[in-house]
Image (cartoon, rainbow, N blue to C red):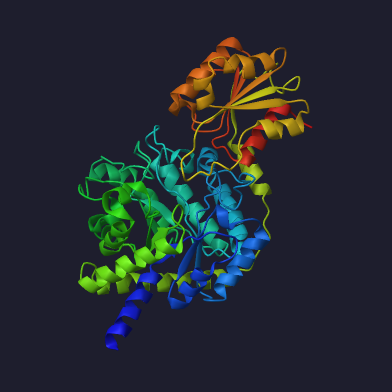
Length: 503
């Protein structure tokens, strides 16, 4: 009997440290059953969202099983959006806010997002990204960062945390100890942050300290190697980084949640179950899972691995219990935070205000802007990382067509350029004969093929207007250049307004 009771208690503890995703717009039976057995958190993804009303109903269904259930989402606004994945975000992301560098604006945008999340029933947002994007070749952070300067990132991290939490939704600063100075996407491989401890302290840690000072109660770990602290295992699996550095040196006593535990940077080393056990043993309190592996089988695999590790002593029971206690404490605090704030109306106008303020123009605009006739828009389309949904629309063609009827547009991905050498002449230049040409790029400096295509188009049409919707490169050709600092729907509208001129 006592053994059975002990087994049930270990299962409850193991369930309590999971933050799993699931499929569908209503809660599946296995999730509801797991909540009854001790599951304390769930994570919502794009596949769980069809409308604001539906998400609120889903949250109510889940919380009927546990009023303090943590309902998390990876909603950064900007290029990484779940609530607005079908339409594109109506608020610009971090890089645009950092470009404006108005901390009151950043706080207002985050507060407005928080109101939308609060109304949807969300209690924890895996945001903001407080990584300092010090490596321009970074394939995973980029415009998700407030910028390349630690001081800028720090002050906007503080404002974003304050804004979101003032709306009753808990923030989560990520990706500790800093994911900005790498050149590998941790969804697929293991990046290495090769700075010294002194460089990390000066470059990467200040925004986390600022977020802590602003009251953040959750930190997400990064799946990257940081040899200055631990040359052997990624930060998510490193006690030296999670306990000695984050808890000891920075004094953080809140919830440590892992980045998605199914990502290649950690599963390639230990498998998803082995990574989960090692993360909790190293000091993580909650395991985010389900972006790619969202079935009951994955949840049960992780529960089984945690129970077996605790039973064998590989994972000390005290550590598992400590993690579960921290999850419970965070659940109570975040539920109280939600109850303390009324559900205020959402006003997305602030997002468009911010997107307009983030727009920068260079080049001789006289005689070019506003466009004198309907344009032909060519959008060069990169592949996106797993954090940014391929289904999320972006660009300038659609909003410009609304403001300048007769505008045409094409989207050209890399593969089409490779397969059809004449595609730029056929689809980009010929249709633009006698008309304005607008070329839209996204991180052209980071994609050689895109920079080459852009150079070809501008050589043929020196009067072309170029819109860069990613990180501004060192030199962008074109008669006039617009920099939106992000590829959100709001940013596309801001660019279209400048191109079309006053209505």
